[in-house]
Length: 212
Image (cartoon, rainbow, N blue to C red; front, top):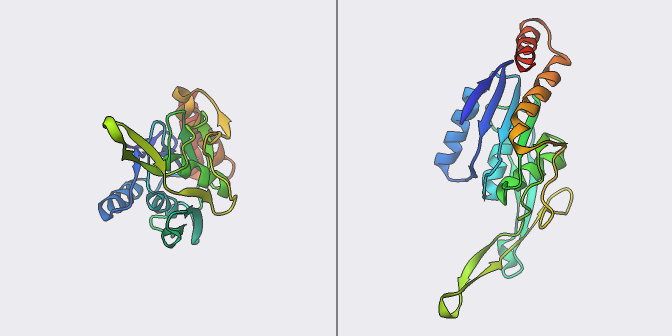
């Protein structure tokens, strides 16, 4: 879902953070649609997750230099451990305010996306605390038709050395999930108006008036 909100604020809904080339191309196309917006809202409410590499791809559009995101440690096979990096991508939104919408059903890789940006000081999180699933793993069959979920890796943020397992990612601005978009839209317009001039200011003022 891609939208231009009143006041020239971009809205992008992401359901899964994936790394294959078709996903990267779709992401770039979506970002191109929103390239001329003055602020960006990314909605990951209810998003179940994805891959660290897919998360890094999205963050690449929001940073101006190569930035470490998370380190995935594989205790069973250390050779598979790695640190992920967000590489700057175009179109770039590194100079614009970013808001991320989260809720109690935001999980796994979508939580990493919110956690990474919060740890970098790159985005304002709006909504409710996320699910709290930071440990990658998979199901393994047991006898009599049962299966067990086995943790396979330990993921930590490259800067904080911590993660969100069991506690979730807390929003910077806590509001009910259904009000998160309106609140983020208002915050985005207020941020734009701090230094906007000319037509950009007039457009943002019109957008803010439409919310009143």
